[in-house]
Image 1 (cartoon, rainbow, N blue to C red):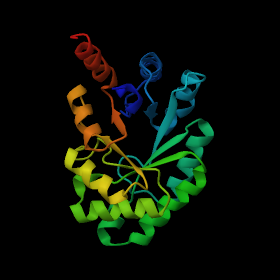
Image 2: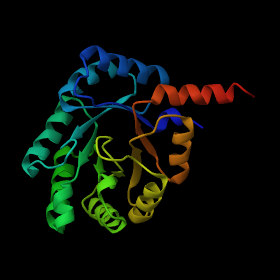
Image 3: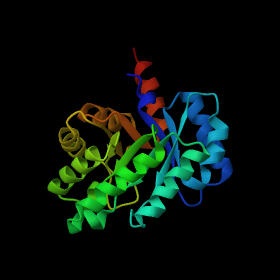
Length: 221
């Protein structure tokens, strides 16, 4: 299993220093991770560190609460792309979803997708706060608005991914988008569990541990 190519190598802590971002990028290059996922302020530096390597830069938008004005999220996404991101991981307006204001949720996603053009949009629905019905609805809105992925979690909520949620989301998007699992993916067993459930991308700060686990497993044979 080429597990490294599933991994968005992630560092979103408020205290992340430039040297930490450099280390993140070095690890991503060394192990062949799909991308590094960083906060907007770190996008330009991360892009400079992975230039020419094939590792992409993903930026979070409206993170972690999703409770910003739509126009602010749209600007944030456009700026991240300008700074070198080719993937955007945005948080939906969770309160609007729970209020039944589906037009607002969908329009926000659509406008961000329009702002970033052909770049990849992942829509974080923050499953820990949603009923199964709300998860399904959020996935439908994301697909309607042109999202490329639906994503389980920020990792900053009350819970992260579960295999059941990944399966539910995969069914909800019906092949029209992919599923990214994130939050609490710590080792190879976790990674394999989510891939088997249908995730095609994994957001984790434990990418090195995951690939080392795979190397150790393969070394047994």
